[in-house]
Image (cartoon, rainbow, N blue to C red; front, top):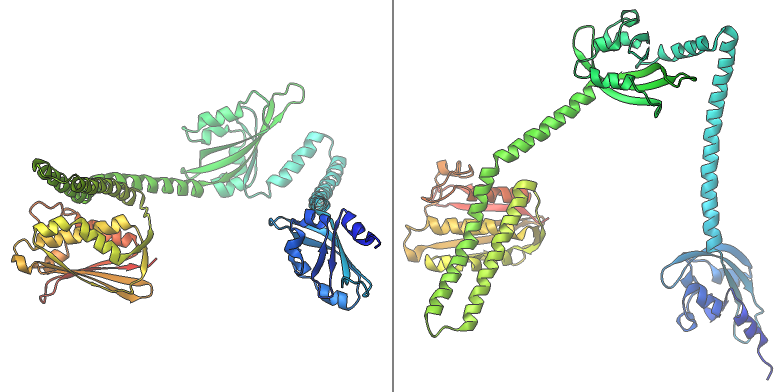
Amino acid sequence: MQPDYSHALFEAIQDSAVLLDKSGRILDWNAGAVSLFGYHKKEVLGKSINLIYQQNHPFQKMIHEQKKWQAETRYIRKNGIKGFCRTTLSLLPTQLPNKAAALILQQNITVHKILEIELQEKNTKLTQTLERYHEQFYFTNALLIKNIHLKELTEKNLRESELRFRLLAENATDIISRHSPDGTYLYVSPACKTLLGYDPDDLLKYNTYKFIHYEDVGKLKKAFNRRKENSNHHIITYRIRRKEGDYRWFESNIRYIYDEETRLIREVQSASRDITDRILDKKARLRGQQLAHVSRLSSMEEMASGMAHEISQPLAAIVNYTQGCVRYLQNNQHDPAQLIEIMKKAVGQAERAGEVIHRLKNFFCKGKLFKTPCKINRVIRETVSLIRYDLNSSKTKIDFTLEKEVQIISADKIQLQQVLLNLIQNAIEAMRDTTQYLRRIHIQTKRIDENTIEIMFSDSGPGFTKEMAQKVFTPFVTTKAHGRGMGLAICRSIIEAHGGQFFINPNTQGQSWIKFIIPVN
């Protein structure tokens, strides 16, 4: 049997070589293809050749129409790396035994293509630069022709420069001025009449320092009396007196003309514009920031009281847990596992107290919320478990009407629990004078629409009077003997920070409730 030289040649090709059947599916795949595309032969046999290309090509149609095809194509390796290759589709004799209909050769030209793209980009930039230089050259050439024309009409280069300077200055909206090194005006453009109220002749021969605000004279003198030739221009901001007597803020771009022999400043030229509106706007923003800072400082006492109010609940729980541990330890038959469980709850409350401080600090100082997905029904039940001791001690029962299909919300769970704890604690304290077996709290959740849910609290206590309902959100206003008057104000602030609303219905018709509406997101 004669050796298959064609297959040996196929495998010896260093570039990628692929045999296709009439439908464009892979029949064979040489080592060059494995190296280029990263797929082993077993992974691609029987699959469409378009597996390796970033877009589909009509290989089946080209094979059917007996078309030879060559193009630069984009390929993608197995590991996701993309590149360029030159693809050549050659048709094979139909009588071949292995049903091969076409041969595709792929030559990796990624480096060449990248260099070509970079070259094109550099060529584009170079073309743009040349065009810009051409424009500048055209403009410069026009100026040069104009200068030559002026030179023919003048006797001295200095007079020619003077004429050019005046042509520019007298048509500028900014004040163009020339000064001697001591600050004396040598020339002032007509714009000074509009901006300062002076005619140019009113300023000539006077020293510019005469019109500068006394607080700014020093820095202007420093700019004019530069001794080192380390820069040919300088920008300075100062106040200058208008003819009417008021001061305006100006910004001057100062340019120095040096003597060619001594290298000392021979003349100072400046282009000055009125920036009063910009300065006043900046100062107004600064005053606003200062007022905001003062406002934050003035609310520190209120914030501290609020934090003390919020942290009192987890601290009370810690006291209850530790007192329980003391009672168990005093009993010689205490259960260590039970003690460990109680202490774990105390630790949890301590951690919660720290978290409350951190969250309230962020809420009051920075306005930041740490939102996470929450199931409101679960949050309510977890909160009730935190205050279970107070409920049992006060003989208070809680009834739930929790809608099962209520949406998951995005909220700060810790702050939301603080709202719930405050409302439950307020209800417990409000029912101290109510007969024990009648002390009940009812918590209801309800889906209002797809974007909003409602949480309502009611109890068997006396409720709020109409007058008190209008005052309870004012800090330090309270109906409790030892209350701080911060709870409901903080509750409303937290709910509103979540984009919700907080309502109190006074006990006008035997029904008093508190509810808040909170958006899902």
